[in-house]
Length: 347
Image (tube, rainbow, N blue to C red; front, side):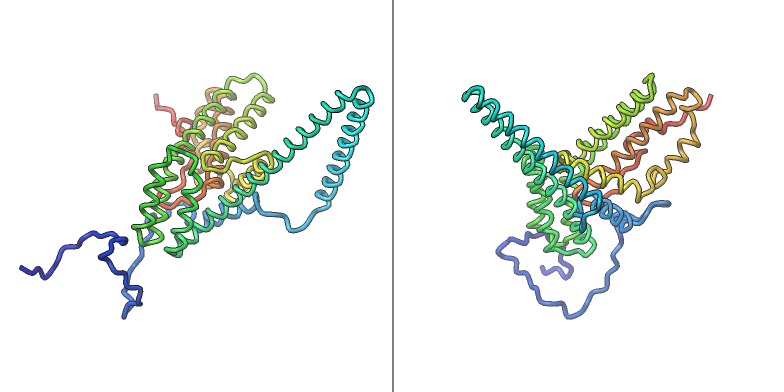
């Protein structure tokens, strides 16, 4: 018996029995596209948020188009210091050769090791900076491909995203899922969402746990530390450690110069988004609650330093993430460190 209303069936695009017709449709179907997530009250639209992230990334990894006077001065100073060190090494080797040929040979061997190590460090720094730049470019390209629903661009970009984590065995299942989606999913926007859900959401959870742990450590140590200088040093060390850890989790692995470039991006993101005042309304929460400061001034400082550490960690998360937040909203301080914003119970 023939059914006038056949039920829908699932099929695979790589099936030899399926023929894909690329000819244009005789008419343009009318459709209404609804965003997956509407902006919440007080939250910036997604395109504005992405422009802020991209501007911060460019501030950290973009090349300077012209040299400033300070740059010229530092280059000259560095050249003189390099010549001074080179002359000192040359005179040292000559003095050792004058004393004994064996000592001169040992000095030459050490000098070769120094040169090889310095070249290795330089190459590693160049690779780290280039990798960080590629992640920033991938972030912007994924945002554009998803907004345009570009299927071909999405397939290429998703493959680049999965390649970032080839050396991580724990991502093998997620990478296999993404590769399967590249063959089966037609819509570019859906493909990017599948890749984000499979690859980045588990990393997001690890990053949020790192931010929460750092904020907790900073708040506890600040509350019991006897000296303000110790607070400052500990907070700086925790921020540096957290920044490097977030970058490593997302595949950045910054070196020495790449780390400072990353700090510039984070500082730019904090400046663009207004630091503590945007999104989380932390200043109003701290002033409105005031619980910790009423109990102890040191406890209040600990809470404030913990909030600042969490905010820096969230900026590092936004800057280092190789893809924009699309299937879920970006986390806030209340999501990663709710213990810092807990209200006191009424008596």
